[in-house]
Length: 555
View 1: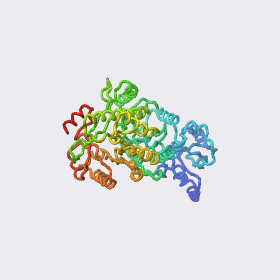
View 2: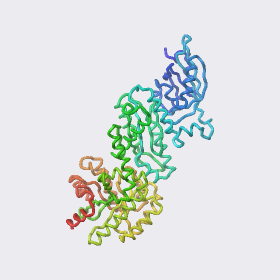
View 3: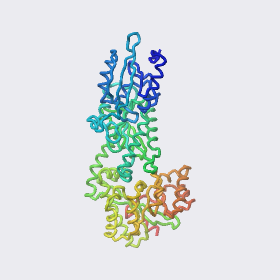
View 4: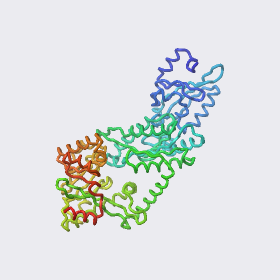
């Protein structure tokens, strides 16, 4: 006989059709039955709620009071009280709960409950608890509540299943946020938060630490279940999303720390998940990584590099390498792309994938970008004076640098200082910088009016600015190397590249394929009469003196 069967049949109609949330749970609070109103209120479907302990749906700050009430109900008392209830998406809901003991043979065997949503009855001003424990934008638990929850889980000592901490970071979100503006960025962040919440179980815990940084505490039966959860979560986040009539694709990276693999405290778990996250981001967007002790050494290297970065300017440790751009019809080098390198006296050549993100994080990317542009223009002018026939100098411009209010004035001042004709200079910006059309249009028009060319770098990587290309005049599209790498055997990449080539021709844009490394790739591109390429098949980025030798041989 079930707990619900202890009531008359007509009770079923009252239970299931009640506008308030109704539940029936066993003495251990495992839910036996729920009505449709509770499903709607909680965000979980019926199957997810059944057999879930009611205690897992109560927020941390209400647990102590709920335990006291539960003791009284088990002793036969009826209790009505206010409680914080966890929605599936991680939000805190204000509820009034009535708990009524269920007796069989004069013994309490379960609890019948009524949950009424009182969120709309709350005062408009935030309570001290909300201010202290919850993020004001997403309404998710904050760092304080995360630590409390995690420490409570760890204090049990023996884990049921495989508990883990996920450190989650939205890839290049700062770039997108800067381009869209704060309000649209906040709206996008809330939409992505809802997506995360849709993948969680009642026992999972989602918190926002800051900006686009999130932590999820989950427990699954096996390591394979954790892996499946991670892949599903990242896939769901990466689904195309509409913001202000723009279709965007936002990816996330994750670092995963199994609680059994680290010291038994919340600090260690979150720190190690963060270390794994950093390593995941080094592998590229949409990646994930599990923590291992060896990653700790890599974290120390990151700290060491961040400290050393501050001295790199003063000690002239930065230098430029130049990668040739080849005109396949003329069979000669027609341009170069300037790429920064960091030669540390003790660490040697530090890969750009390591120090560029650090420069962006510390704000050094703006002065670094200004130095790159100045040094590249100076060197290019020297080559021209030596009789070199190069026609283009390409320089990458970061989002932060481009967003400087005096960016155009800086570029023109550098050209005047170095004596380089603006017609030789091509500035490479990313697709994401086109998201805010109005903000970039005036700058691009001003630069092109002076003869400076504009290229879209890494074209096709997911931000879909095609609608903006009609509004913003540019000169060059650079096909992202990710599409070139597998072009000889990946049908989808072939179709994408063919489409980009056709579109560029119809729009009369110059086109360059990046990352050409094999003869097969070159052959395929040649079938579509793609004129310009760059990549290791022809030459890696070279110091100025090595490039001069290559130029001399190709003349």
